[in-house]
Image 1 (cartoon, rainbow, N blue to C red):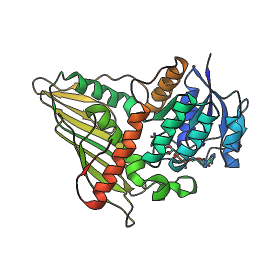
Image 2 (image 1 turned 180 degrees about the horizontal axis):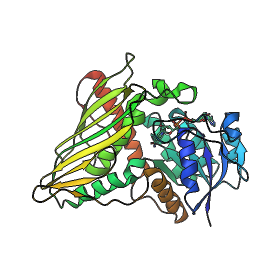
Image 3 (image 1 turned 135 degrees about the vertical axis):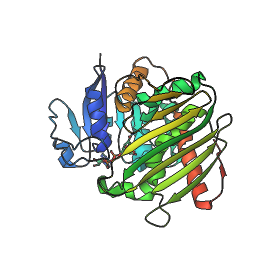
Length: 340
Ligand SMILES: NC(=O)c1ccc[n+]([C@@H]2O[C@H](COP(=O)([O-])OP(=O)(O)OC[C@H]3O[C@@H](n4cnc5c(N)ncnc54)[C@H](O)[C@@H]3O)[C@@H](O)[C@H]2O)c1
């Protein structure tokens, strides 16, 4: 039987999760909740983001529509609450949903601060409910495949790795929360955390970070460059930016140099392996996108009452801690030891 999901927050990610659950036979969206009456009417044409097309009108027949999260949490038909609210609301609503006895899937970053993320973990434990955080890059096929190749050590140790993610300035969010550092944590916590989390997935926990950042406004981080000190890995760097001009295409990519081969994943996500000896070859990766695959995985874990072997809540908490260390390094202009 399909797991019954309530999606909380129908913005860029809420629409994306709604569609992803719709593509999964093991999921059924039975409820949605948003404070915006236009979204509740099924008119999602105003939804925008840095990837995917514009929103459209959606038929919500058969789906319970709520204007207040508390009402959705009281709906016995909802088994899992999928939180796609602005970041600063994650902790508050995740804890309410857990207390109401729901399992929770929450968009990344886990919370606005690591202290808040810690309270979410405690709430899930107390409620004996599952809590998963949607770090989709761990599930994105080209990234997941590269991780498998690196961890197999088939091509030796990693000498260097660089991960790159850029977007235009996100001017499309509800109440412009993304451009408010206090609510979003800037490009560092919102966009760049994808790669910060992924390098931990691939290389473990970094000892220290050195970051540099710039922003349109003083004190705001719209572009961040980081190098990580990973025991056993070489030079690992990331670049995340969202200050590019309108119309500049979103792109994510990476390059990894191992002793016996190099991996290139350009923005079309066609992963290619360049061996030291022999011809370059396309690397076969499974079909699908990170959103659909992660949500399917989390619902499977809930159905089987097991933890995820890809991502724990501690991993998601650590990624928030890592970003806090990176922001501290960018502010103090000094390397920062990461306290996990
Ligand atoms: N995984 C990814 O690739 C990815 C991409 C973009 C955003 N995100 C994350 O997803 C989350 C949501 O971002 P977004 O871009 O979809 O935001 P958004 O601004 O597009 O949408 C937020 C929605 O929440 C609704 N809302 C606000 N307060 C509410 C409340 N109290 N109750 C019910 N609804 C409420 C708003 O009306 C709006 O529809 C953020 O944490 C963001 O970091 C993840």
